[in-house]
Amino acid sequence: EPEVTQTPSHQVTQMGQEVILRCVPISNHLYFYWYRQILGQKVEFLVSFYNNEISEKSEIFDDQFSVERPDGSNFTLKIRSTKLEDSAMYFCASSDALAGADEQFFGPGTRLTVL
Amino acid sequence: AQKVTQAQTEISVVEKEDVTLDCVYETRDTTYYLFWYKQPPSGELVFLIRRNSFDEQNEISGRYSWNFQKSTSSFNFTITASQVVDSAVYFCALSGMNTGFQKLVFGTGTRLLVSP
Image (cartoon, rainbow over all chains, first blue to last red; front, side, top):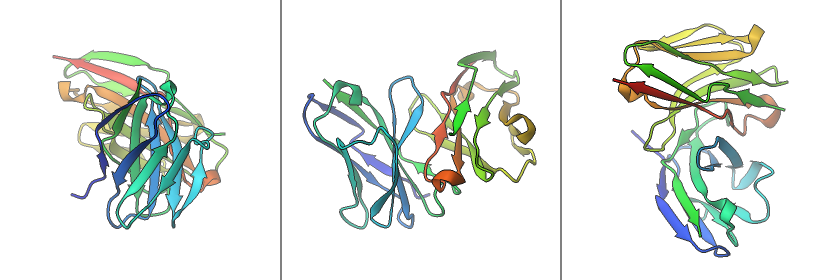
């Protein structure tokens, strides 16, 4: 069964450094998403991406964040100048139909630890 | 604004007991979707069910059942004859037409502990 994959599973970085979290969505999917979950808290929407552009973003997704689909398979989340409060689990998701109206398939997540 | 409330932070049951997880939502959208996801200790999010706002028919899948009531804005989830493997955090979520269904709004989750 096709699945969303994410690398790395765990990323440790120093405060102020840039990180890139990588995701490979399911191959025929057209909509891509990033969510984050601070430890012990709820899952929060960050951004959705369709047709090579951001279609929706939350207030969390400020200038520190950017997303990109550099090729036909990868979908990345870049966090510039990381802060301690960026420590969280970051989930990538994809869907193949009208966003939200169809199931969003989630990847296993990348745990980001900012020291 | 959209909001999902899961008032039960944690529930502990003994194996074979039935348990119901509550979910109450708020939205101004007339068309929306409701979801349940399971997050086991390993951390991934596992899709359980999607229900659209026009379909109030309850659904049963094995030991799982869902009760959608628009009149009370609730979408409750019942596990019958719970098992230790059901131990996880369960999230209820909503997506609405107002945002083009572009995002899932999650509740804070209910941690279910099933002991042998």
